[in-house]
Length: 287
Image (tube, rainbow, N blue to C red; front, side):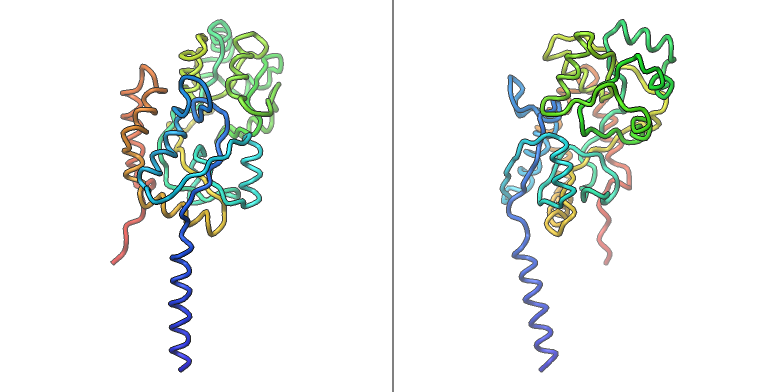
């Protein structure tokens, strides 16, 4: 009798678990081209806009809802375990203190210093090529700016030690920082080469990019981060289950190539080679 009750309870719990599988993903995005583009001629052509669309093409039965939020509020929401996913995070294994991560979705080329051509020439002359970043940070008269809330992987400890001239709050921080560089109100920022490509393509700017000595990673894996909750873990498992389709989604690849610019062919070779690494694959089911 007791055994029958236990089995019945287990079956009920299993059924409840299946019934609780998320039918909607709540996304949080920020105004940060070319990751998310919320207005203008390239609206919804951001890399992570295309990633969200690729996920839902691979999961056609799952609905999408999108909130536009400043980056610090997204981080706060994840820290509060609010059930949402942010598609533009850096892969740090299965999880960190803020989020559960999917497998890597795509690859970024390493961070570079972005500045006007004349300043780029001055920085490389004084600090070498690649630029000795810590030496540069110690020279406080060179004005560094970046959007508030951004984190920079292995370079973050240096940035924690040497705070920037400006950490700009609010929406639109990426483009605002680049516009300030163009207007000589800042000297340089730190970002991916695709950001300079976007700015030069859409703002008729002329930004140069410089390699960084302390940037040891040859690639930076992007991933989707979801709340560290049961809901977040279920969403991560769903997305990982269709990751091959997401990575090879033609429209997603088209947008990745768009912002890689003239180096799109070389970028895709890096992207596909790095995504094939064993540690970026789903574990094989054991018999």
